[in-house]
Image (cartoon, rainbow, N blue to C red; front, side, top):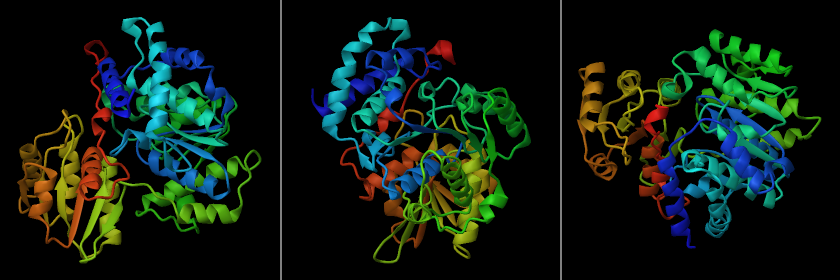
Length: 426
């Protein structure tokens, strides 16, 4: 099997959609000798900030000399971004080996209970981290938590960044319902931490923690304001993520001691592409990339622009998925834009560029909002703009990284982020 064939096989698994439930993952992991039982985890859930918090934890523990596995999703360009050890992407050869090993085992499942793409990838990651003898795995949920494939592990700590509206068709239409799904990662007696501040979400998390006898640590803006370490990621919101990562390290000090120097180094060198990532060019132009794909993310982006780029009104290139609340995102971002070019996202779920432009005009009638046929066309149109923000979807951010030559991968595999839920699950 070649790497291309392995990726094609994984593409094929998208037909099985996204299923909630742990049965398949438990069975598939058992067929490969339960690799997760040989590993230690920090399990991270939440609506926004999961990836940044995971990147900070990974960076801190690596700075202290640990061999750290990192499992995140979605990927920006290459599938291999999802599975990393010490921030080195899993190799193409290792992807092929794991797919080759797992492929025949999938015949053990009836067609109507076939493992999904995410279930297979989660088990691949577990196998890889065990084979790599990782000291610790930073383990990000895919969707929700309670019935997410990642939830077969018993971690050292369960971390919930925050609760906001996203994926309501899966997780529920109230913050309390969404919180109940995220709180599903809390395990009996295992320390839990959260930076959630919405009272209805917090109430649910506190209730689940009490039920599970899991000591709960709350992190809030007061903790964030006391952060003395410099985090290399842009945005005030990252102080809260940093405070949450630091609280997690503190809670686990007796199990995994970490020096103050490692904490400082880890936070000051953390890297997390596509989230308020500033690209600077020799001619002085700047491009800010941020995957603000929900209202909470858009508010964070706007706050960062108003604080860190004072008296600068950037040109926006904006594209979004149709199943996101893009009208609300347009309303939030319109006042801080000088003009907006809307583009289709390279996804079968893209929102119409014309509808996005109309939404910006409705939100801010004086705003010059127009469409381009593609991201490359939009970049040509604004090639002389001193400051450009590309946002609205991580798919668009991934395409930008690839097009601008800032991607670690040579070929795009963004299509693997796509999945279609079977009709009976919607």
